[in-house]
Length: 243
Image 1 (cartoon, rainbow, N blue to C red):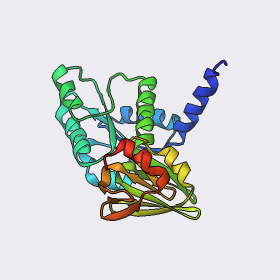
Image 2 (image 1 turned 60 degrees about the vertical axis):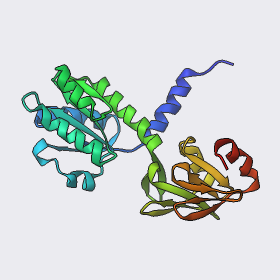
Image 3 (image 1 turned 135 degrees about the horizontal axis):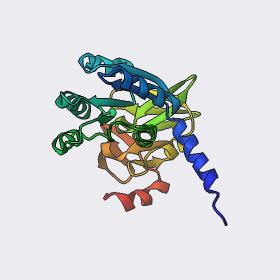
């Protein structure tokens, strides 16, 4: 059977386009900022905001809620941009990438230590910006659960999810500090979650294994909650975890 490569590419593109992106551009050069804005909007950013490095404060992250930040590293003040990257890496879960004319290896090493998803040298090309956006979309697809809620799209960090409970046609998603209730099926959401982190213990329950405190024969304990284990899932769980 011949694989239709074009059809497969279309499926991947469609899945990526479902990940709505809000992009923050931290840049001290208006022309660079506008050039970046045109590219990211061309490739599906639903909203884009440009600020300079002096205006970069935590309020911009909390109010704008970007899914990706492009940080311009100035040639005469390289540490300023790197400090912004370091802050994002240590204090938030926001993805970011650097754009710079700096090819000095020491500067590049300092920047890379902040864990960006990319470091692009100027003059940048459209394809390089597009590639960073696609990398971010892939990471967001894994790190966030995107669910439709009426006319909005919920973006729930998977690391925050403790467990999911199915009841009738609704799914209760319990997080560390928040709870979401959406109209969906449990199987549909299971298909969206990273399989390495989530386990189904019962026809109505899925748990984040990173939050499991204790396991018994008929139940497990997740952040103080008792989650049932059905007979049909016991054997599968035994293969993964030690009882």
